Image (tube, rainbow, N blue to C red; front, side, top):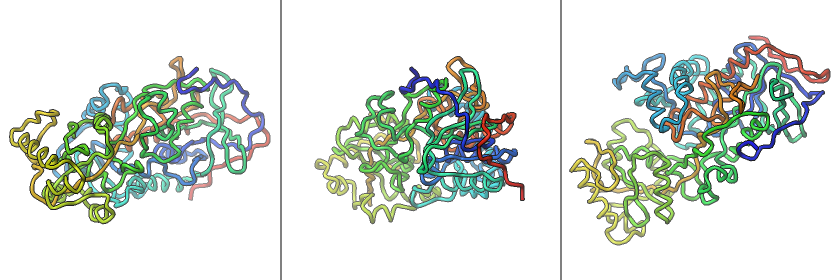
Length: 497
C-alpha cells in the first residue's frame, strides 16, 4: 500500500463527464495560481478548483519573502548589498536542506526565481518593498493574515487577464486514470451541489499544498507531532491529494521532513507581528529562554532544532527576549518587523518592562534568573564565543542590558511539510517505477524533493511559483485529447481582449 494509507485505485473513469476543460488546476495558492496563469497565457482553457471558500490558502498567510538571486531592476546591487548568482542560491538551499534536496530541482528553482518575480511585477502589478540579501519583500503588512496576498493577487491578475475560471468550494475526491500506463484524464470533485466529474483535454496540475493540519497523516511520519502541536497552516492543509495521486501510481518522498515553527502564538499557532519580532530580532542579539529564565538553544539554529529544544524545555511558553537598543538597531536597518510592536504590546502579545530583572519578575521567573542568563550571554558576546550552544556571534549583536526590555511568548506549531509527490524538473509527477505519469503535473508543497530536511523561508514562495509556472506551461503544451463523453459541458477559453 502506498505511504499514507492510499489504496490502489482500480475504478474505471466515467463514461459521461459533467464538464470538460483543457487544463484542470487543483488548488489556488502560489503554485496553482501560477500554473493557471501560465497555462491560460499559452492558450488553454483553465479551471482552478479550490476546496476552501476563499483562494490563497497558506500562500496568503506566509511572511511575504521571495528568494531570488536577482530581479529585472537589480535591486540588491542597486542597494549596495552585493552580487549573487543562481549557483549560490542553489548551493545555499541544498545546504539548508542537509543535501537531501534534488540538485536538479533546486537548480531549476534558483534559475527560474528572477524571471518568475519579474513576470508578476510586469504582468500582475506586484510591488516590491525591498531586497534584503536574497529575500525580496512585498509591502509590509501589520497583520500576517495577508502577508503573502500581494503575490497571490498578482497571479490572480495575470490569470484573470487570460480567462482563468476560479471555483471555490470544490474538494478533490479522485483522480481518473484509465490504467497504470495511461494518462490522467480528469478528476472528481465534491461540492455543495454534489459530485462533479470534470475531464481534462490536456492535463491536471496538483497544487493543493501540504498536510500540516492533518494530525493523523503527520503522525504517521513523525509520531512526535501530536495534537499538542498547533499548526500555523489554514485548516485545508490536509494532504488528501498526495494519497489520491499515490492511488493512481505516484511516488512520494521526504514525507517525514516536517517543520515546526518555533515562534507561533502559544494558544492558536498563528503567526503575527510578534512572530516577526521574535524571528528577526535574534540578529541583534535577542535570546530564547524557558519559563525558568534559562537559555535553551542556539537561537540561530534551524527552526526544527529550535522547536525541539523549546518543547523539551517542558513548560509553555518560551520567550524571545530583547531590548530597546536592539529594537532601535533593527529599525535603523529598515527591519519592518518592528512596525507592529505597539499594537502587539497594547494587546499584551509582547510583554514590556523597565529592565531585565523587572521583565523576569513580570513573567514569573525565579528571582534574578533572567538577569543572570543575560549577564552570562553578554560575557559570551564580549569573548566572541557562545560556550553554551555554539551560536555564531557577530560584532553587531548587542548585550541584553539596560531597558526597556521586551519578551515575546511563543510555542512551536507545525508549519511546513517538505515531502510530497516526486516530480522532475518539468514538474511532471513521477510514478513508483520512475517514469512520468502522462498528463499529471504538480507544484508547491504537495511535492517533495526540493527543500530536503529544512528550507530557506523565501524559497517556499519562489519554488511553488517557479514550478507552478513550469507545470502550467507544460500542461498547455500537451496535445488535446477528447474525453469519452457526449454530454460534457465544455469550458472554452474566452477571446483575448
